[in-house]
Image 1 (cartoon, rainbow, N blue to C red):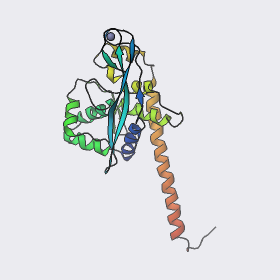
Image 2 (cartoon, protein in one colour; image 1 turned 30 degrees about the vertical axis):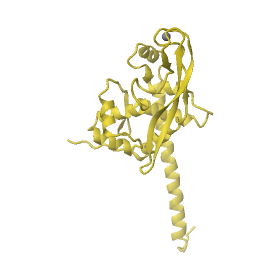
Image 3 (cartoon, rainbow, N blue to C red; image 1 turned 90 degrees about the horizontal axis):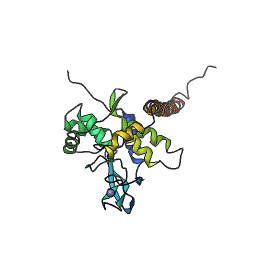
Image 4 (cartoon, helix red, strand yellow; image 1 turned 120 degrees about the horizontal axis):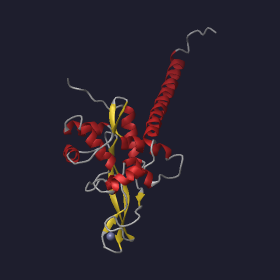
Length: 239
Ligand SMILES: [Zn+2]
């Protein structure tokens, strides 16, 4: 039987809104040289494409900044921890979405579904990311399978309004330390992560969806009241 996959309108709003909350953020955290453990010195700042989002008609490119350092001992130029997998040119949450959707449907359809979720990635890039040796943890949310990174980032972005800025290290953690994947540091960073945060993310994400649904219900009620008052104003009222 051919399964149907549907993008909820709420997700088509939430995913691009979440990714755009990270526009312009600077990632500048690195303790020492990952090659030799040497002392690092400032080098430069690179601007990288994190995601291309769309509302169906217009596109917007979300950029982030990543600081580079030079090791004072082995002279290697190295990047700070960043939300990118090694050797990729788009943010790791977008790669996670590509891999997740490509595991459920053909590449071309995955690209179409991504567009419906507000993310622009062509089918060849979807194929390229899906063929990489990357592990993506997913969650079933309202009938749609989503990468855990997207669920975590949505929660983080929703808290950004309460605080003045988002801590870049929280973003790296929410993304699952992508720039450390395929290195020995990756497992250590995952193990150091506080236990139980995943469950909180699910709860917060559900609350956000409920909140969006309530706003929709409120505007529907207002609309219904206006319609009733304009259409039924001449009817006799029995009180
Ligand atoms: Zn070094």
